[in-house]
Figure 1 (cartoon, rainbow, N blue to C red):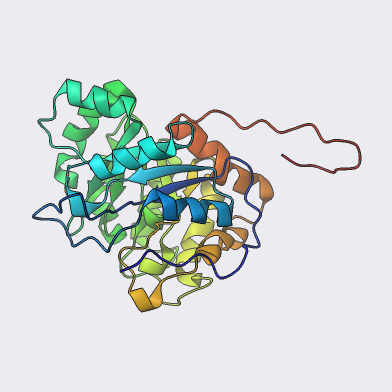
Figure 2 (cartoon, one colour):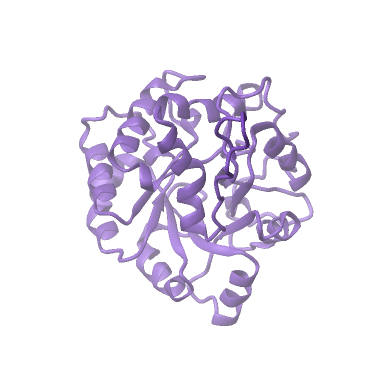
Length: 299
């Protein structure tokens, strides 16, 4: 499988300077697949991703460890090194027995979070959430959690016990889309309202039944989350879309443009695309440039 094609058009949303893609993956044949991991979709390397960054106006990225490689984080961390720490961070997968020296080395290489995926193929499950979170808390890292959102009521008490920040992936990833009034989604809203839960507005194509480019069913949930806490929402592409069929890949311009509906206020999109990920992942602030005479507002 080749990496996804570039967007078919320029996005309607003009990405502000410092826009961050907070969830994507790299793959390369030279890294061995974990025995329990799903097959890699094919090479998807920094050289191809840089072209997407240019096409969409992405300035920063958080590279998430693919399930295909288990806790062998070399592909992820090597890609972060190639992109540079001024624009890239990593989310890694860990064994509970990982030692302090290995954690410190990953931190120096750009790791700022640990992946917990309670779905088939995931390396670290929710049963190990608190042990994992405790291991990385001294470094200032946080867990990112992916599960079938319909299970959130079962895990609400456990998630509520987390003291520091954590992130829930892909608009909650309700594998059968639910309505905004569904108890599982109300659970997600309660978690967000506590103040330490962040949510990625991403990968609607994985669960939507209405389909693209607008993903109205998932979009109703995303818009409700933005209304609840725009200061803790994040955006992501999920490139190279490893779960999508090769003949049904989403257009990355559409995946950015849905924010125009989910977050219609420009100030909220600025938070989601730039300010929130800068805060959570330790990127430097992007300062608004003073307008030159006759230029209007700009960056």
